[in-house]
Length: 246
Image 1 (cartoon, one colour):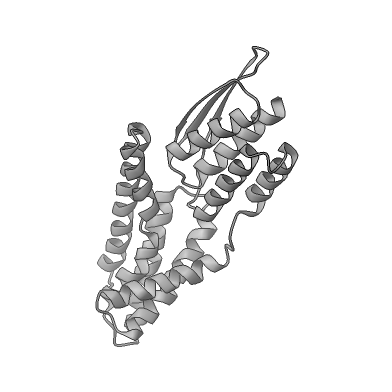
Image 2 (cartoon, one colour):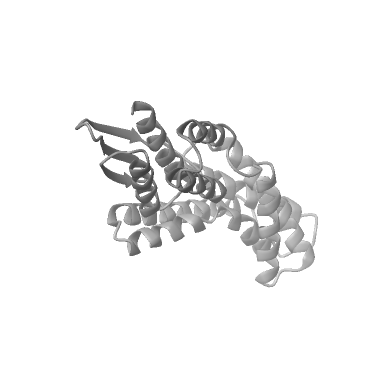
């Protein structure tokens, strides 16, 4: 039973650290707990903590508290854990297979991390052109956006998201400003496209879903997080521009 408790807690922890909404985390824990043979499952998730109580048929109660520190948005990993939990609940995989799969996901993650800057750069390019930029401005935004994501990825395990956002926006503004001194481009559009890779879109979406699900604590805390990140992005750009940017 102890091993099963650990597996259930690990699945919930992975979901939380990757930005899953609270309703999904609690539903996954309850589904896995029932599939593991526990007679009653109680769970309470917040963005910074996970509380689980599992009642075994013999009367024993297993209660665990897990502090969640840091994390990063990873929709692919959320989907992987969700699929594994459903497969376990349906009896398609054993507890040992589940343990191996969760350990693999924790160590390697889901999806190709090296492709993240490239994909983000493509998004920055598209956004710059969508707001009226030329191909050249879009290209600059794309390259700088990829650079920003690379820099931020080096900071993920060392600094909080607010610092990452501020530093990333400063890198974006500085890089575009330097390029703008050599090329005839609208630096405002290029900067806007480049910093969009830092926008807390998933955090905002998850906050709304939490609020609609009645998870007021997590919904409000994530809304505040998104607001602070947005302010940090704006502040980072403002600092660079005030020091002699465009």
